[in-house]
Image (cartoon, rainbow, N blue to C red; front, side, top):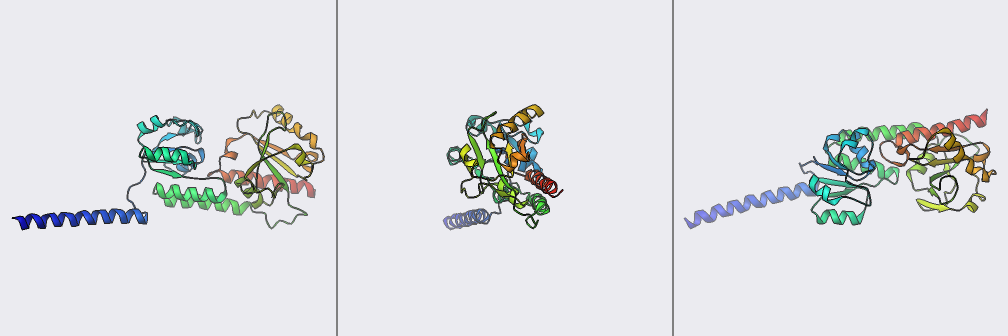
Length: 300
């Protein structure tokens, strides 16, 4: 009797060891059968990736700033980047939380027992990597491959690095300033998706020597530069014609700049320009159109 019980216990232990080994092996090889069914997204680019892959129905929570596609506005809001409603997220019981990298928030979520994944989007490489990662998390790898091919094909289509010009068009990318003035000017630098796309289209950053992704500049800095194009990105600004013209006028203090002389000052108020995700294809197409138009006018 004792021997029978002993053998049964040995058998159970062996089965348990096999189960643990199999489970751990799945984790180590990244082949877990579970897929995230309840997702909280804490950044607009992440929400757009999820929806582009066709997993809208898995979103149970989103940040206040996640507004595209319009259908996601029906999803429960869990606050913004700096004022997350942790209690609401606990009530939503997500399988996973996807966020723009933030170590403090990560630690809080993990202490609450949630699984968290970081999805950066500062560069084209970041965007591609994040799409691939979301595809794996959602078990939608094929859809992710299709989306990435579309992005890569578009970037290849707009690539004008082989276009012969006397010099590449030097641009600045204004991502912040005081309305109605040139105070508190912030530019996007060389290691950003905006600059990368501009370079693919055949341009160059007028401040390419600056190693920072985003940086402030003074008015004096512009007297040392030759800038062909001024591109400004101000989501939320009023986009009526009078407002746009008045904001373009503030640059006339730099009437020595080719961009000012030739009226190559463009203001964009659409949100997608500053949401680096699947819609970078639209940014690429617009940049290519701008460069092609300037070249065409110069050659007429």
